[in-house]
Image (cartoon, rainbow over all chains, first blue to last red; front, side, top):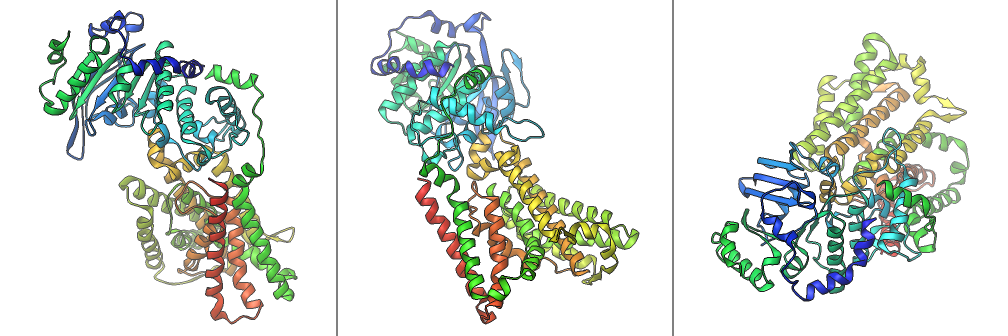
Amino acid sequence: MQDDSATRGAGAGEQAVRQPRPAAPSATLRAMEPAEATGRGRVSVELRHIDKSFGGVQVLRDVNFTLRAGEVLGLLGDNGAGKSTLIKIVTGVHQPDSGQILFNGEEVRGLTVDRARALGVETVYQERALAEQLSLWRNIFMGRPRTRWLGFLDVRAMRKVTADLMGESMGFTSAVLTPDTHVTGLSGGERQGLAIVRALHFEADIIILDEPTMGLSLKESDKLLGFVEGIKAAGKSAIFIDHNIFHVYSVADRIVVLDRGRIAADFPTSRYTLEEVTGIMREVAASGRVSSSPSAVAPRMP
Amino acid sequence: MTEAVKNAESSTAFGRRWTARTFGARWASQIGITFAFVLMWVAFISLAPTTFLHSPIYVSFAQTTPYFALPALLLTMVIVSGDIDLSFVSIYGLAMVGFVAVEKTNGNVGLAVLAAVLIGALAGLVNGVIVTGLGIPALVVTIGTQYLYRGLTLALVSGKSYALVEAQDSATYRLLDGRFLGIPMQFVWLVLVAVGTWLLLYRHRLGHNGHVIGDNRPAAELMGIPISRTRIWLFVFVGMVSALAGVMQSLQVSNFYPQIGNAYLLPALAAVFVGGTSVFGGRGTVWGTFIGAFMIGGIQAAIVAMGIEAYWIQVIYGGIILLAVSIHAVLLSRFER
């Protein structure tokens, strides 16, 4: 299981937070070039001209967005910029008002959560997608229980899988914790582990992390960033949404900045120093429109 | 996934280990309510031995408690899923209108029961569709449909009662209200429905999803749980058992009167909450509701048998309900965190 290697990679993530990575690998440069269907550079998800509004308020305007295989994409933006809505469109929770969603080059209409999962999209929503009063195994199998016939549950198999995941992937060794323990009995870090393992247990190609470091201690954040490095190493792609530029900069190959529902900037991380990225963010926050296209950002390249 | 399954098979490390704490967390509520029930019954027996040491009172409990315990069982599932249904008490009557219409025209009692259950299911469907489709809280919708269904019942039969003496000879009567090895069939049905509800709540996809919906609705949405479909099914089930209870009671007394079921709203809800089901959803037990129903059913008989003035009945009801709910709260804070 890939999550094992992820947690072991914690050290690498820790380093990455402390010092900006040196600009180099060509893998990130490729992200700027037009889609070439070769290996890791293959486009796995593409959104075209997505519009979405809720009750008359336009949340996303003409959003174009691509995610390539083996890429970690950092999604930045202020509160209300439309990050969560964009993610919920990729995961099938919301349907766009207009525009196209393509998975591996093929348009998918009427995307639902089930369909997105079948296409390999898994989301780590952290604690807020755990049911506190329910047991660990019911949380692991939330929304997709294993059944035998007529919808009756295969409880024994689900308990077993949960017990094994607890031992191997979550590192729960306390004898007090069993698959039947309720989530109320877990610490913050343990809940985090449960949410991540749940996403990873079901073979995902695209892993979405929604505000994963929110409310985490420094040590827990480092562990999480190491886990994101592990996703990349496993050749899968990830979308990493966060307020914290430092976290995003340290793991993302490419950064997309959303501002008031538009893509304000889209650039490979390796070409910029952390200071420059902070500057771009400040500019977007201040004026929004100035950097409203990636090309506007390009002249800032060293 | 397949890899994970292989891992699961190869590892035997994690059995279910019971400690006092895990055991308490899992069973505290059900042990608590059972203990309270036994205590209460011991008190009844010692205060009114002539009544509580002889079988007639138990036959009476077994016949009358299911009339409100049946919907209470399914109501437990609805409440676990974060909804409520106050309209079930009117479904007794509305369903019986269908029963009477079929029974009086072609005389087939079995077919009449089917008609009643179908109307119950439809009434539940209407509740579920309004609640999920328009996003109105179930409390508000079912207050409305409680009046609507009761009003329809009264209007359709012009407020009249119907004698059902002829149905007493039917096989359906014996199946619903007869005896099986001396046990009233109402009780047998209650046990069957309780087992069925337990399976649905704990061992079926419907209950698995319902628990999540009641515990954390946004999470259920994010994880792709079919929220509306699940909630609608549960309303339909409440409608169906309410209809069944209405038929059972009407056949038992050989009479259908349009106000049937009216008195059961608070006893059924009390049974659910005395049984330890959370008002906020996400947690509840079928066993608790089952025991809770007999606690509620027993109190009135006991008070009369003990010779306490009837004015005190409601005071004692209130006291026992508050006591049971407090015990659950204390047990929960002790074992859950």
